[in-house]
Length: 156
Ligand SMILES: [Mg+2]
Image (cartoon, rainbow, N blue to C red; front, side, top):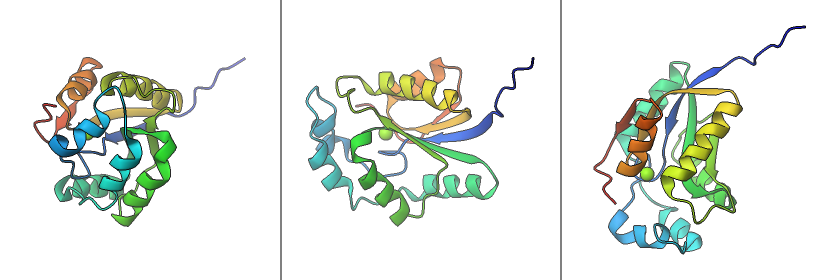
């Protein structure tokens, strides 16, 4: 009897807010960084936000070079349609998207991303590089032994 392991898919992981999407943490952070989340107001504010062009360019170049692109965000899964609409409007291709589960509002961003990393690995993705901005989350990725390129100070 043989146990075939499914092919591992190497991938580059990108955060969204503050990494691919302009995010004013001082103005919008209070909507989503406290224990009580105001996701409708947050998504309304982010619907028209600008893409962070250099990071978007890296994403597109990696994709064009054959890499798998996985998005990993603390945004909740219940608003996935709004997030996908923004990604499509900004020409950001991806092969997988992992968002905060619906019952995880109380979890910190690092804890959410720990769970999402486990899930993407179960799905066969094999992250080899991560792009993120928030310092606490960057620390988490590095604690997992991953190389994380931090694209903003992210001290919030
Ligand atoms: Mg971020």
